[in-house]
Image (tube, rainbow, N blue to C red; front, side, top):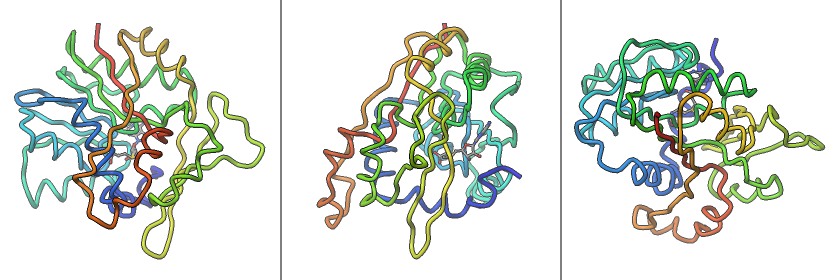
Length: 248
Ligand SMILES: C[S@@+](CC[C@H](N)C(=O)[O-])C[C@H]1O[C@@H](n2cnc3c(N)ncnc32)[C@H](O)[C@@H]1O
C-alpha cells in the first residue's frame, strides 16, 4: 500500500488552503507560462489537481502518473464526472516508460521522495526519457535551504515541517510534514537532499540549467481574513521552492 492511499482525501482537502492557491499554484503557473497546445506529463500527479488545471489552461495532452492507487482512483473519478481527456496511470515515476515524449514534465513534490542520490537519479532519468530535447521540467519541492529553526513559523498557514530532536539535516534525512485540518492532523514524510545533489544529479541525467525559483504570493487571490497572515515572511523563508531544468 502506498503512503498516500490512507491520506488521499485529507491531502486533497489540503490543496484548498490559502497558501496552496495564492502561493503554490500561483508560483507554479507563473513559472510554467503559456501551456496552450503543449503535451504535459504530470509526474506524482496525486488526485490530478494540476493535471486538470493544465488541461483547462489549454495543454493539448496531459498524462498523470502516481504511485498511489488511492490518489489515482480520485483522479479517475473526477475524469469520469467531468471528462477532460486525461490519461492516468498507477506507477512509480522511477523506471517509468510510457513510450512517448512531452514538452513539459510537471512534478509537484516528486523529487523530495528520493531518499538517496541513486533514487534522485532514477527520477531524473525518467524525466529525461519523457521529455523531448529542449523540453522543460517544472516543479515544486521541499526547499533544502529552509532552516529547521524556521519550520514552526508556517503553523498559522496550516502546516509545519519537523525533524526529530537532535536529527541533523543530511542527505536522506526524513522531514515530517504535519497538516492541521478541521479537528485533526495528518502527516507524511519527505526526504532532504541538498541543493548541490539536485543540480549535479539532474545534469548527469541530461537535464541542464537546473534552477530554484522563489515563491510568489498573489494577495489578490486571498479572502480578506487571510490578508493578516505574514505572507512576506512565508515567501522569504519558504518551506518549498519551485524548480526548473531543460532537457539537453
Ligand atoms: C505531496 S503529493 C503531491 C501530489 C500532486 N502533485 C499535488 O501537487 O497535489 C506527493 C505525491 O507523490 C506520489 N509519489 C511518491 N513517490 C512516488 C513515486 N516514486 N512515483 C510516483 N509518485 C510518487 C505520492 O503518491 C503523492 O501522490
